[in-house]
Image 1 (cartoon, rainbow, N blue to C red):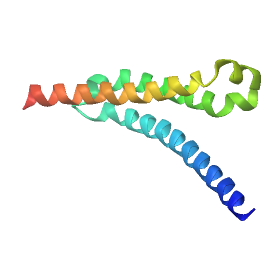
Image 2 (cartoon, rainbow, N blue to C red; image 1 turned 120 degrees about the vertical axis):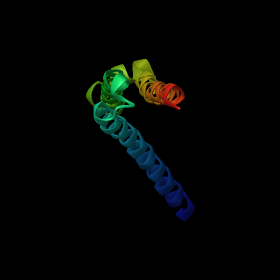
Image 3 (cartoon, rainbow, N blue to C red; image 1 turned 90 degrees about the vertical axis):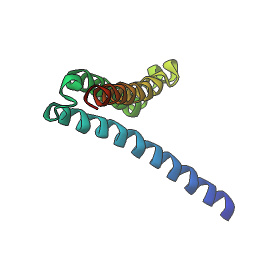
Length: 108
């Protein structure tokens, strides 16, 4: 039975780390986007990045809270909110990266 207890603890820790990673990604994208307007290189993309970060935060909240508030809806969409959240964060990273590369080429 001791081995089964270790597995349960491992699963709980893994789920906890995943939840922390989702929250950290949403907060990180929001904080970084809020600082873009202060940078001369990122001022042009600050509105787009902020809008994408806001959408990501909304889907983060949906991902973490939907199953508690409306469990039937969460079961019906089957993780679609998680995929949209991850896509928003990855798209945010891609858009900011492309903008930084283009600004580097134009100045360098």
